[in-house]
Length: 339
Image 1 (tube, rainbow, N blue to C red):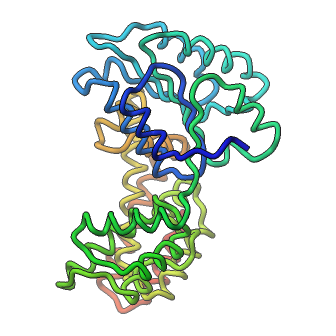
Image 2 (tube, rainbow, N blue to C red):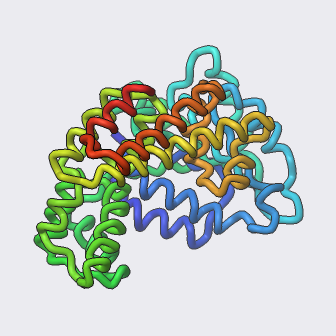
Image 3 (cartoon, rainbow, N blue to C red):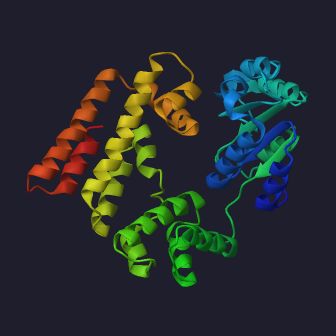
């Protein structure tokens, strides 16, 4: 395995004086990974010229595009940035191996270029082959591992303090365990808990608030519903509904999440008809570019008829829950089974 890094200290040093080159981001802590990417972009790309100097691509077949973009001088600025998702690195598919590796080698030689290779948790395993391939990649390799409990606890306390909400260290530790140590899930739950207690006229989170509001199954992350909808994972959504019933969550809130994510997929689907890239779709729709990239394949696979049908099913479910005495959770189960 790669040598252990103090990733927060290391990324702070890099961002204080970022240098052109290749940056390989990997590891399971998506929260830190995404924040570093966002901060690096802010540090090197002038917002007024972002459309001219910032590019994101997805897939190993984008190797030629990466090289072509790398050769393009920055426009009215000093730097150009490319973010490459789903490159299949560190061990690219055989048919793409040479183009992908050549693209990295070429891109590492430009004094104005920042190429960020964004890898998911599953892209790099602990296998000897993956680790050797990772070591051979050019540029800086940044491993975003989950933070140890003591550092994570301090981070949780700081975030509640920023929300002007109090929580004991004991309950903060309980929340951390409940969220499986994921900063992405924790950030979402901290925000939700802060809003919840303020609506109740309080300024402190208590254990009962956490037990009531936060799922006790770490599988149900902040993005679980959207992930299941993209993959049409009916079984996963049914499990989530059953867990929500057990916690006595309001079914209207779960329906709202399903409606929101469904509408997002449909909006991306119809935007794709114009043929513009994901970056432009994200900007037009006011969505995060990474979210659009994740949703793009699922949106493309939908037909317009399917979009219309499921949106109508969502609205029918909403009317049924509001206007009848039926079991709202059964209505939700019927809805997701119609995916």
